Length: 530
Ligand code: ZN
Image (cartoon, rainbow, N blue to C red; front, side):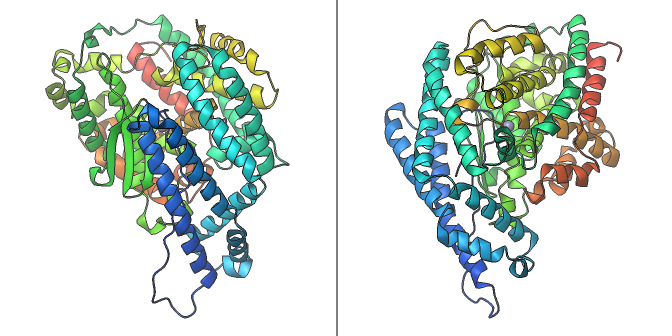
């Protein structure tokens, strides 16, 4: 199985349990089943590699007229790959290696590999092959229908596709885990071990405290954004992206960049992690913060310990944890004055307009908080409410079976309740995100989980290393990246997010540190009492 990687700001996961065949000179007593498994997974990896490159190409270069052929190629390789991941041969090897006398001899990363593969094998084994093929096809067509519907702001064009994808997604998870709650299964696909009881608990904390904070912000004097108005050269913006990627620690020798409609990150392997960006002449901040965000994803992928290469730990299926790293760079670091102090002159050299804008004015502009319609353009405070809206919608779809034609109104009602504004059309309402068109229900909460992890990581980092502002002002951002490498990145997905929080912060998930960070930061910036 693979995730389609399309035009979101997401890091999208790939099933790269890439395990290369072992070479000769094996020791006499070596585990032959383990050898066979490694060789088999190596074969699967080749299919995954091809699929990923097809997606990369489709989203960066491929022309519209070749789309049908491209869809056919993707269907072919994903079906072949699905066959490999559900073959009896694979099942036998995994079952044998999961017997205690064999399992106990494996190292931690290999144990994880056997455990995850066996779980996925058993899940996929329950899915009929013809269903899987038609599900893949329905999702691909639905993505295309969504793109058109979004452009014309016409939900009715997309509705039949969405209805089909919802009912097939329900069927899909029911095949996988017939005895479990379908929405919890979906949440677990993107953040292992996560369930809606935990999410309800922490989202409730946010629902209670964010609206009053937002009210205080709205009642305070607003930043003047006119200084940023103007036209910004696209080639210069690309140089700014390179400068920012280098500044935060992206390894250009283990990565590549390209343009796409919406920015995303693609992990091919530890030595090849790619990011895309998009450029708007009248909005240089968009590409700058996308570069920092995707760069954060990429640094995670590039910093996994090579010892875990070719094991399941190399492949980070924990989307909340992945988002926490991109958002840590983008928001926790990138929206601080101290982040820009060492590089603001350089920014002015590349984009001369910034020479006229004092750093303080710039910092107010990048922390302008106000309710708005579009999630991907939202500030870090109202962003949380955008995610809560989508989470409530997904529960309505999967738990209450709300009919598709009622979804646009439900969306608008939630928008009004949480953010106090109402979309004028579905283009700026329910049609804005692509996630549901490709069946990625349960993905949205991971963005906000990531932000909550960030609040906790920030607290732990400052406990150990002192003020982040001091570190940044002194140009020592590399030390922060090193800390993240050492505490989080190097392990890949060896630990679940809950385990990472315990290891790094010594406690379970809570929204408190994120809320404290918001209150402290915005009361200072906007000058109100906490
Ligand atoms: Zn992301």
